[in-house]
Image (cartoon, rainbow, N blue to C red; front, side, top):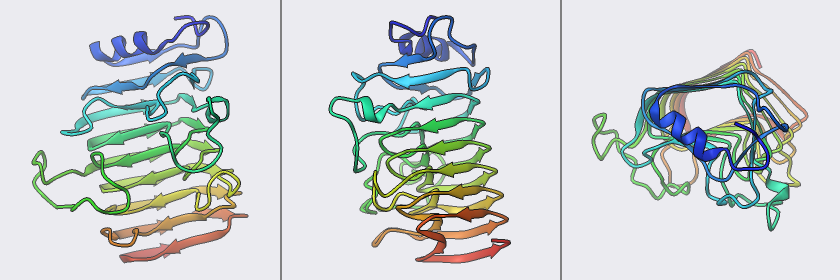
Length: 272
């Protein structure tokens, strides 16, 4: 598939609808342009041949479209891997440019997915987060009545058993990596920097937020996040607290704050 001049999203979507995908670098140009999101069904791997495989969001793409997501945001999906791609949300070149605030979408965002891996990706210039693991579509203010239901039930709206490892995330309007309403997630060896207050007050490196349970945050490096903490484990007012977190062996430099734990129970923090 040539990267320029046309939208590569339909071909990528058709490929992942059929099965797992290996993506080589583009034949022409520097990027595969995306006019909409790539939405993965269950039991798929989307594997890129390294950071020469660059995806870039077209200025005409819907603002609310993630770059990569799962197909069913309501009932959820399972067993999805996203590996080794470069995801450029192109927020400054949209019409109008998305300079401030959190209107828009993330680079890689998985909703209500059981057993996922997001590894080896470079996420930049997204209007919301670089990487987001969360539940079904809910209001981030915590208005959703989060329930601990049986897997697959309407009460159970969490993501489960995620790995977010060895990714690089920069220049996004909000956090580099964030989780909401997820159970058991490993966030390891990631590099997040440059989410600055110029773009969005409160932007941080790594945030485990409302409803996150049993996160392990280990061996990450965060720097130059002027608008927020390097690492935050917390909950918004009125929302379920993050709980049972392990935060160890991380490095935080030149951020507005280091490591913050608030509105949370059962935290172990070592090696910072």
